[in-house]
Amino acid sequence: MRNLKLVIVLMVLLIPAALHAAFEVEGVLKADIGSPILDVTTNPAEDMVFILTPGAVLIYSADDQAVLDSIPVEKQFDHIAYQDPDRLVLTAVKPSRISIIRFSRIFDIDLSGRAVKGPRDAKVTLVVFDDYQ
Image (cartoon, rainbow, N blue to C red; front, side, top):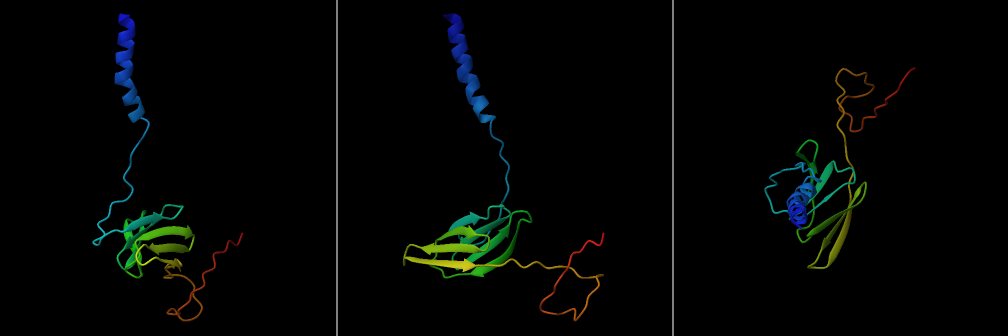
């Protein structure tokens, strides 16, 4: 009976430690937004975080830890959801409203030292990545 009590005491002491050791926690994003955060969603790749604030959706890069852009929206929206690779769904409770917005990510490409045909300040730049093997 004494051995059984000892086994029970050891189980009570060791099981919580074993359960706690099953998880590892790592902080991925810490940011001071500067305005109230109403809702948050991420893209499936989890490299962008969409933060809904009154009047704007902030697009935050989890990798760079910086705001990439801001999309102005109406102030009554209080929920956000990621729908597709290029769509966000915004909803409001009062007044009952929904809006789906489409966004496109634009990448800056450094052309310094590269062969260029046409004006360097053109509004559109086509870049071809070829492998001449």
